[in-house]
Amino acid sequence: MEDENSTEREKFLAEQKEKWILDKRAIYAAGYDKGYQEGIELGKRKAVDIRVVKKLKEQGAETSLIEKVTELTKEEIEKL
Image (cartoon, rainbow, N blue to C red; front, side):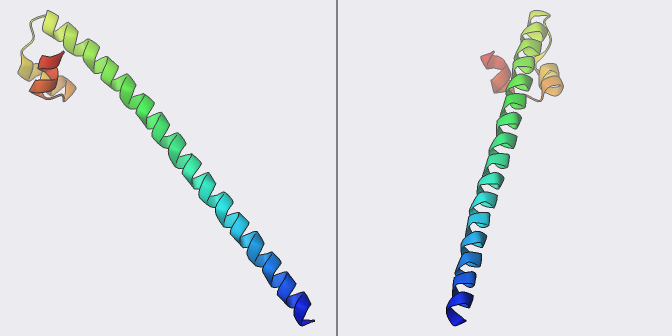
């Protein structure tokens, strides 16, 4: 009887460990996917900012206006 309880407990613990590992992997994967998507969105926004800055500069807009519109720094704007 004691061996049977011990075996059942070991099986239970092994199942719990496996569940924990799978949960940990799922959480990591979800975080990775979210970060990846946020990175893509950030890249898209930056590309739009670059196009807007270049157009505003071509039209003779003041750097201070471009800073307000795009929320980029003066240094970032001057690099473009």
